[in-house]
Length: 296
Image (cartoon, rainbow, N blue to C red):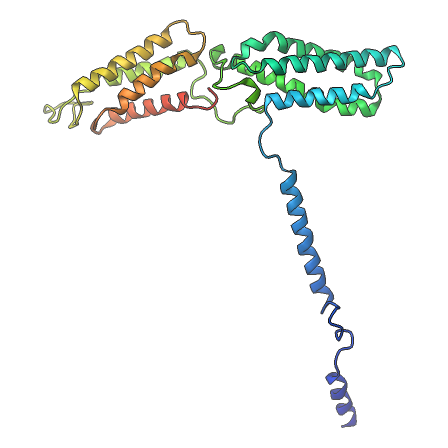
């Protein structure tokens, strides 16, 4: 009994280790608290370091200029080899500045000569930077790679859509360095013309009729079409086809003709139902996706 009572008395005593209110109640809870705090700090750091938007051509060229100038400015140029490397870096800085200023144009063809100058300057730096220290060479690697990306992006702009989509709606300086993930539904004007001609044939087959003739097929179904409006749509699609059939310098020159057709098409009333109606709607949706694509 005495042993049992002593045990009870011992267990009823307050825990001296936990009697101090300033100490944590237990080690596991303390670890849990610190882990939560660590995860919060880590998440905040990741959010801060994440890029807010895609890098543009203008920003990329500024980065090339700063990186090249930083390496060139700290060289002693005490040998012919180092002096050659510094001269090539200064040339790259100058070419980056010239091309950056020219990117105020919306047409990639306008900067072809300056782009070639940038490519030549990059080639010179890649050859002469072997005269620099390994640390400087490692620092210049990403700078030259970014200059190559600028060249590739501008080249792609000139070659896209069979060389007939060289311009954008704004300045080239604001164009993303990375290509758009969306792809144009057509690769050249010939493919675009195929859908335009299909659309023209389908529009020409529209038959305004509230009460169709027995045994009719195609568009000969109940509809609420105005014959005059159908004629306007037909003239508009013919105009778009003629515009695309000429020797266009850039496909964006056909945008006014497309907008005219789309405006008249949207004024059509109920066209009825059926396979050919769905075909016409699909063709127009495909054309609209092309002309509204941000890549244009």
